[in-house]
Image: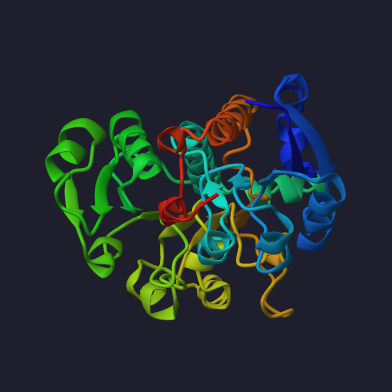
Length: 331
């Protein structure tokens, strides 16, 4: 790979500074995440590629990069990148699958345990010098609905079943992997019907991509199907949940608790000012950090560099390419 000038958004650079700084193949230019800043830096430095976080890029970026350039997502989810615009501009879009699953699954389980043991309210009360004990719940024998049985959902299911002794129901439209899910991942029952799974679940954990089909999948109707004693966990994408409906369910006693790492707007801003999830004692929130372990970030950075190396060598088959149609165009 010839040395490439690569614009990297600052949060992503800081997550794996040692990896990026040590690369003999990159000249990194570190900028703030807004699209205008990224596009300006690309033009000013003649960058051939960008490495981006979860922000949405809708316009200026696609005309700033040269044809054959690379938009590399630092992570797996890619709903912030317009693949059609990138393809029209002759840009290769990549992500880094297969490197974050353990980190996200572990954080999901941390949120699960935290919600069961009221950690959010305990931290608040202790910070306020108040002694406010309350009983939690044990997980053994309880039912977990894993909504989306991909690589992360499977890991959550296996730990819940084999480690915590939970009964696991998988919500998955593709039934071809049913035997494997039962044999290797602890999923006792598989269904394609969300309502069928959540009606008896003590915990519902979401592991779905953000698409038009999954937007607000967990809405007022879905929440009404859940047990009032249930706990909802989301380490997938914020758009999967209607946060106003969630707030109403939590305040109205129709849902016991929620633990969220992702939000409709990030940094989190309530969709309605008077319905702020941060003010509720039965909500545990973290700032989209489920994949942010030192180990995972190092793997992601290494995978980003590998994608750029493959692009430079025109070894497109080795890339985690999200818009393969771009290869039909001349670079």
